[in-house]
Length: 79
Image (cartoon, rainbow, N blue to C red):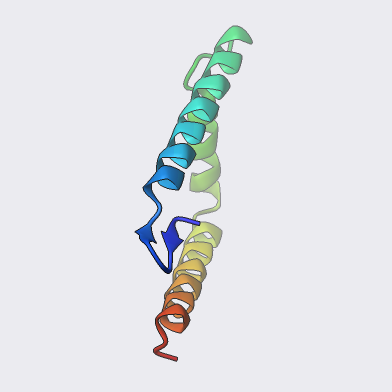
């Protein structure tokens, strides 16, 4: 939970998740480079998947943002 309704932004959780993503990316790069594929292989694979599924990705992002917006409105008491 990045937003605490009582204390605001949870910077400890944001730092923890950022560090976790950094270590995951570093591990994926290390494994792919030791397999002989190059350290950029995980990122080029994700980029290729995004290019192949652009419509689905955009629909998912739009629906997720609408859901987050309405969740935020409910939490603030506007609805």
